[in-house]
Image (cartoon, rainbow, N blue to C red; front, side, top):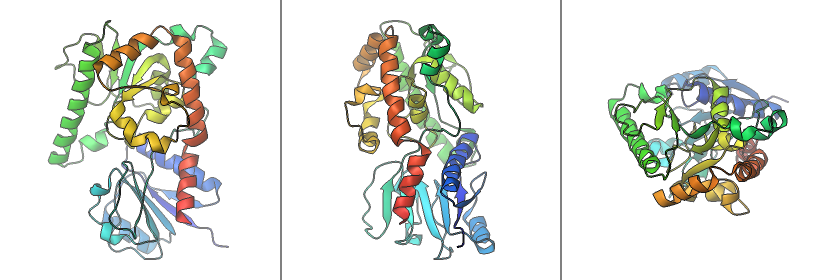
Length: 332
């Protein structure tokens, strides 16, 4: 029997995008499929050429649509932020799959459009806060970062050559940072907040308790920051992005706090059977943000309890194994 082949194309050549596509490849290979992973996004023309020269049964392409000249026997899987991001929906047929990060409803009933989120990266053993407790029972002192904000804004997005897109992305991310800065400024106490990301806002920052540490270029260091932070503030506030920190923060039992606007987008997909406050913290305004920080800051036992609940949820339902299971079920 001929082995079915997948061609997997990441969102960009950023190391986080490549790791995500490798996670998907690993899970597909465990199911017996042959996978070829590219290390960057390519043009429609180049993709059409590859598919003329090489035989593939499936193409999974992140954040890009389906080129016009694709053999109808090749099933196309496109994973987009939003359905409005694709201008080539006419190229898809009823055998293709379209996944979106945002929930959406399509007027085209022939197309299969479903929400699918990223997942936790678990390609190897990742230490949790509970693992550190086994080594040192003073884990509370190990968490020496009051709050952290880790942006998922990458160089691949900033230096893409499109000035209009760059300006819009930078403006959107600046607005997000300013909103977070306002929340931090209104706290009762002067907690130290460490910010990690591509953009250094220190010149416009008015709060001396916010420290900018630049980019994180070592994947394992992301997990170290998530473990060491008493609170991990999520940068997204509308939908979970491809390079989200959401699942990885919860995977290491970190305490996650984010805007309730995001909760409305993801609550159904997370399939949380109990009160969501058992897994993470939310806020609707500065008063709620202040209440959560002040209530849990000195309560390590409560934070680790929430973290363990969250990690259990993620390991059960939100690994890339689960996403590949979803994909294969949808391909049937």
